[in-house]
Image 1 (cartoon, helix red, strand yellow):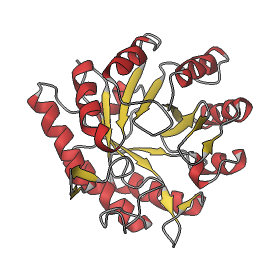
Image 2 (spheres, rainbow, N blue to C red; image 1 turned 60 degrees about the vertical axis):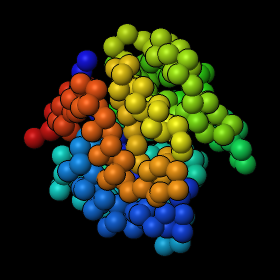
Image 3 (spheres, rainbow, N blue to C red; image 1 turned 30 degrees about the vertical axis):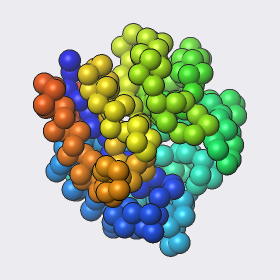
Amino acid sequence: MEKLIVTVAPTGSVPKKKNNPHVPVTPKEIIECALRCEDAGAALVHIHVRDKDENPSPDPVLIAEVVYALRDRSRLIIQVSTGGRAGTDLEGRIKRIQMRPEMASLNTGSVNFSTWSYVNPPDETEALAREMKRLGVKPEIECFDVSFVQNGIDLRDKEAIEEPLHFNFVMGVRGAMPASIDLLLHLRSSLPAGSTWTVSGVAAAQLPMCTHAILMGGHSRVGLEDNIYYKRGELATNEQLVERMVRLSRELGREVATPDEARAILNLPSRK
């Protein structure tokens, strides 16, 4: 197997410090946390930012502060979220990628979560994908449902996305895909040849789903965005969650990729 890429999603849009005091919310906290996670073995960081009240923010100035600092101080692959809790208008999403991170999330469908609808109209998704292509930003196709995989393939067929494709299976969110090994096998079998894939298991699903990804040749995403606990009743840090994935992967006989090795696996341009 190729080496494991460990992605860390340290902040997300939902958890606040009242839920877990280790959630980084200011640009400085996010930057310093990402650097510690790189030291722990993460190769890729998925970036959200917050406003002064810890709410999700689409502010490109805050995003740029994090992106430019990490570009200067780390080798991490930087992936910016274009997700909807920080605002779903196309213009705002495009502004989040104008500082040209190496990667950005691309949601290729709509889904009803437990309390709100996450709507991604096909024309806007395609426009965002084409803008990523123009800027040289590789999309990570975020899959909250099985249909999102085919929607990503359709964008490839329209030449809005270039191969090889990269997918992230988000499993365990209420109202979206359940965290199931049988479903994970189906998702993997649905991908075009040469694609790469990551699993994001939410809450208690994080550990088992990411462990199965290790065994199945995929990659693993951990972090407080998806899960605030290390185990039942014990709050986690991002660093702990990264360290556990690294340790498990090595125990299972699979070495962990450095950021530069991850770039080669994901077919990203090498970085000087």
